[in-house]
Length: 123
Image (spheres, rainbow, N blue to C red):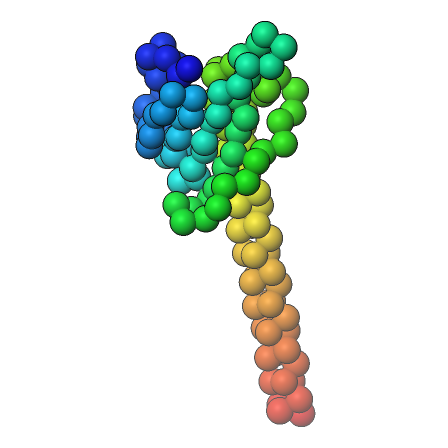
């Protein structure tokens, strides 16, 4: 069962607590805006959380593939989410950098083409 200790361990500057039910905790990341549903399970006598995720409020949830210790308690689940956010933001930055490089390359090609056309006109 989700406890008051679980709730108090969550950094509310990083997460908005959207909903708390007996065995489910729903969070929203302030960094990415993604929603996370943590479903508490007891497996082999150990408390674990299944983590599902969606990008927008109206999207369906999809389960995350848990790596390493992320299948552990609430702290491990939170750590997994924060790591996922870092990766997501890093990919967005890289995508933005690639887009900017392509834009600069297009401008450069256009300038070279414009210069070539001027030399043809000047001849």
